[in-house]
Image (tube, rainbow, N blue to C red; front, side, top):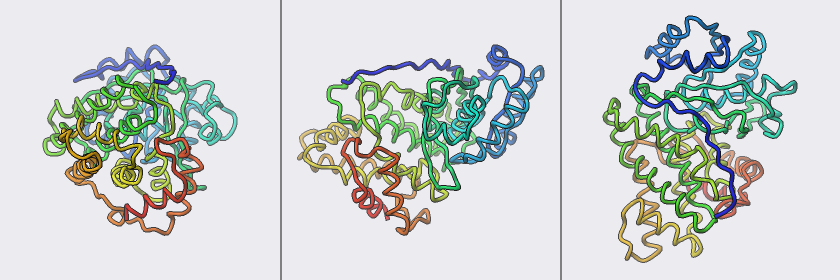
Length: 386
């Protein structure tokens, strides 16, 4: 196990009705609140009205229309609102895109240069407004970590950033707020959780036994509860377990002590930088072909461990048969969630494979992944997704 620093200081207020604590939480920071949200679903499901009622004694400034895969221009719009209204705290109500955008807005408020500088170089983030979140979609884990992914639409570059100062101070996680999620978003969020866990699970570091057993428990949780949430969207147990799995999958605990770059996310970031693709869907499409691409004599035992402990496959199967069965089970699971499993199905052709592969290697550090990859490897994985 490698050396590590782990500090997940976000206060989680989990369960029904926890939004009632919002005034007390926000009052610690001031009265000027930037209310960040997306396309307006929180107005349809009543969360917006609840927040306005609870915050009647606060000065609430709306920061609406944050898009999926949030854009740099939206970050700049949020920063300008913070400066114009002397904002004390950002209240991010939504899923990962809203929270990610809010993190960079929080940091950009204290930075005189171009906000994109903070995305390209996270060391320039030295201070940020406090962030409080109300989660409405489980998947990214952004409610309990420092990471944020932003898209520069002018250059078609999608990059991640983050600093200790951008971790949310408090996150309210009420599983009932997930009841109205469309099935597609439930599936995409579940695939995102699954992929976050796999990115840490498949690392070179040996003997991270605690982390790997925890990872397997979260994978088993998604396998059990995602199909239930798809069929019964108001099943509280399913929503609660998926929400908590989302937070634990990417609050740092699974990756602590396991150094190295991620494998699938850098490739997917290029897909959704160039195309209007839901992040979790892209991850699901890429994961089985990536697994098959890296399966070899050095990795087969890890895939066997995954197959036995997660998919409950017989341990006495021939090693490569067991590994391939585990990969097939992963693909079948994503298919069971009605996720399209080819790039063709989501309208992506091979025309940009070369440029996306180059950027994935350049920006994603794929030379340091579980199995190091170059541009040729990435193109082959994309070709296998057609």
